[in-house]
Image (cartoon, rainbow, N blue to C red):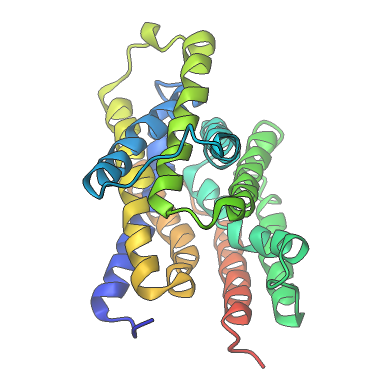
Amino acid sequence: MKKAKITDYFLLTILSLIWASAFFNIKIATESFGPITIAFLRVFFGSIPVLILCFYKKITIEAFSKDWYWFMLIGLINLVIPFFLIAYGVKSVQSNLAAILMSTTPLSSTILGHFYTKEEKFNFVKTIGILIGFAGIVYLFSDNILIDENNFLPAILILLGSTCYVIGGVLTLKISKKRNENVTGSILIWATLILFPLTCIIELPSQIIPSFNSSVSVIYLGIVPTGLAWLLRFRILKKNGLIFQSQVSYLIPIFGIFLGYLFLKELITYKVLISLIAVVIGIYFVRKADSKLFI
């Protein structure tokens, strides 16, 4: 991979901001929409830019090929379940807490990678990073000002949603030889097909009169953080590699806290800041171990 330039770091920062912006927009969307509807609209609007790209580049979508069950399973675990859990949880907790909880994905992926891959085994540095990161999350749950008996379970569900992303990533290895655009387009199609009947039956969106802000937020969630951000991620991956792209993990919770305060005036306690620092340090150790900078 080529040495990263200023423009590459700029695009990485933009990607981090986009993904971080999803959390406060989910919070706004929950004012009018239920969690299943939010999940459905995210995958529906998110599929549009991806499918347009596939059509433009003449990439075949294999959603209904002989491997359809993998696309369906990955769509369910990597999109349907986490999108629902996050939307359900954010309704009861601050969006900045969700940003921190979701930032544990690299730590969870390291744990699963140890058990399900041959290349990504634990070492001393990774173990230290995981312990520091999850200690930060445990400490976050001790913040009685922001997490209490009324929203403890929603916070746990957000954490579970981040784990679903990791499991979905492991399953994607089963079809890793297929083009990324094809895989993303196919799982978005299946996620849309799964969520559409559930939305119509359970939450009856036709009876909802959403506010303007919620409508804008849910459309934004689909097109930008779900669709366009994936395309930007793919560009960064292709040019700079996975290790460079993975640095978004440091920035997302930081931007998530800042944006939550800026747009929603969300409270930032000292325990939130300490938890954030612990998680970022934990991710730093894990990433450095992966890049073999520790000897």
